[in-house]
Length: 501
Image (cartoon, rainbow, N blue to C red; front, side):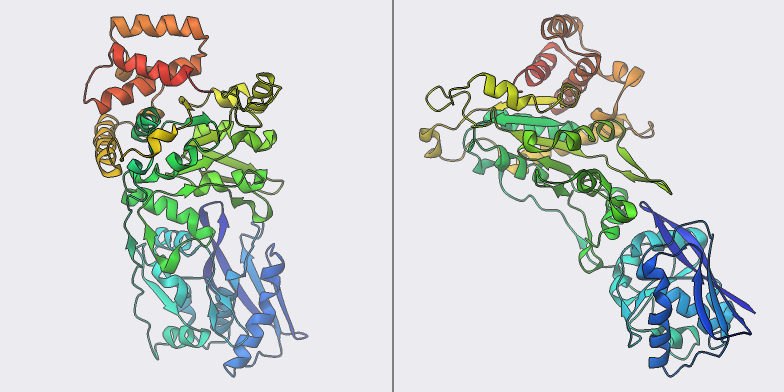
């Protein structure tokens, strides 16, 4: 007799169903796991044997074979423990085999039969719902998996609880989803003294999800401005929150099974490796760009990042996804993020201050900013010079609009864009528009077109730069609640494009 149950194997953010088959055959006593398991899966036999012994269940003196199908799909992780134990209990007729044939389970077993939480409960619940199966998981994963309401999710504290549930002795109640964590405004934009132009640039960038780079002397407020950007962005929609949480679930970043409506803000250090930033490494895990999906990726001290690492951002910025290619697998992760970068103008940081700049000025600035390649710099929609704040300005009271006021304008502009692109798949904001669609929505008036053509010739704008100016101009017009792109909108977009870096 062969018993069957199901679990999942992760390929990127997707969970693929894996059939767990258990066969008992005459022969010398043995316990083997086949189907391309990694070391953690192969070691499951010892954890399962000990957990069953803790429940006073003895293994028969037979040859036990566990097959993980499809056999050519790599199986990685300790979450295979529970489905292997369930399949074995069904083969021993301790639990009804028909009860586990429509069950997806995952969880790591401790030696005392308790269940240890594992990563990826949310994608696993999605896969179970698509197949029409119920899900069984550790207690600590129940709140996370229960967010997928299309399937029954049962969370057990131990293998004994799961056994009593499957035999009907003590059925488990369906798990309830964790808390929905609402987004907050965070630090107030009015805390930044001066820098009114930089605040305006942040507002424009937030409204259309445009990439922005800020260049300025140390202490001019670049990091302070970037930290206030998430408060300007609207909360994640339910669909966006689920997509983002599935990635965070694979990395164990969901607190108590709760889903956060606030957009992610990731700020990796400039010593981050290529695998840490774009993904990869062991098991091809998601990188910072995927963890920033639907949110903000802040790269402080941009020229200090290794150039080979920065160059890997060029394709994900354009496509909104990253493909991690390995010899045995190709893993795709979404990464539609807003890139915010900050940099000093030179190594010493005081290139614009004649009294403090080093003796190598201005060549030191050219060498330092030259670490950022032209193709990468061309992908920034807004290039902003952030001057130092005068001491007299630090004593002035807060000026400008607060975060709540600016966030309201950003939300209104985004609502206009969402209504505009509601029938265009894959396009949500102005930053996504391209081709004929961009020409349709962002063609400026005659004066604006003439200004843009002269600016393109004067500053040598590339085709990409030309189209990015149009996108920014369309966003500025949306902030002004103007259905048409006019000359002032184009002029401001050009000013943000050709100044700064």
